[in-house]
Length: 494
Image 1 (cartoon, rainbow, N blue to C red):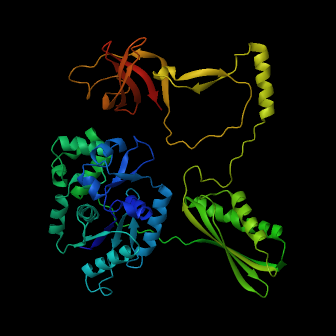
Image 2 (cartoon, rainbow, N blue to C red):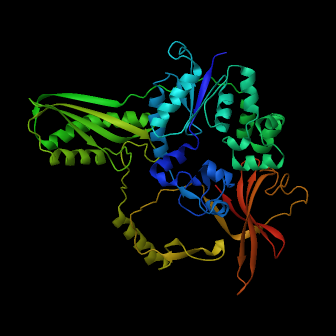
Image 3 (cartoon, one colour):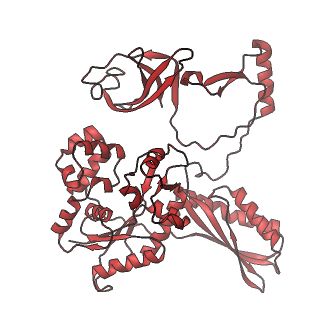
């Protein structure tokens, strides 16, 4: 059988975080989704894991288990940047390198044709570890025969492992704990209550039942472990930098005209980056000067962008700050890209074209015809109950919108008057409760409770809120009124 290897950098975002904070090494440390007390923990080191901290926990709960826990956030752009650097670094050892798109810090490497370049697979694996250690990363290299087998063992060991027998590799992967794999925390905890803690125990469960109970991801993990989900190695081709060059008919000395020449080169470069799903993170500007050779300038925007106006403004400032000793005869620009967010994947910045003055005149006509309180807008306020957190205030004039980046796209629509729901059967509350009727199917998952109580000074409130996922996709927000002993529908998530 052809061999393949898995290179795993345990808790890759955490290693990036520890490079920024070297003093956190040797103590419990974790990467959180964002800087909030209730932010979920995403990655943990061994010290934190020994203290009981696992991915999926809230940061506040993790602090209760490990008071000395240190935590910070690592942006996806930083992870992608380091992943691409390591991809280039690993190509020194084999041309077949496939980074994982689902789990950062995991790479699969092909070993075909390397027998005459390295004395043994073990020496080759140790050379990879030593090279990554030089770059400041701890890595585990496992050489085996299957994609899942090498990946699973790489999550459970701390050093190089080379298998010569496929049976030994298969047996080693069966003993790997599920807690070491990239599995949904809810599924992991549910399986643990069933006594399923290893890969071998997972394989004893029926695949169809896993799909019905825990969803597609758990079913795919079962298929991969059983060897029925086989995918070939798909190496990523090395992405060449986007490059453009222009030779001028006559030397140019005017900085403004030089910026217009750059625009002719920059627009197709940004289009090519956008087609690759990237944004411009840096621009290397090489200027050929008449009789003076080449001059190098580097331009780096504050954040990866596809806005040509911003980049050209930085180029103009750089050219004006450094007078040229001679006329420009050649221009070459090389763009460095990073993965772009959906908001960044556009060629030009979106500028609003609405006439605010005309809008204010229209509002004035509405107030004159319908009254001063005819035009209102919603405003959030502090209140105890969810339905009381919104009030309406008159609109006197329009202002240009300045939307903040949204952390999530789901919208919770709250009902002004909660709707009573039919009570569930005692035995079917979690599996078979037709909370929205036959149309949406039975309850698939019940998340909560999130308790809200108080109001004893006026009218006591004691509610236990839950998010309910129906089998046919509906996601609703309900609560159980402990005083009235009844369930109510309070909103729907869209």
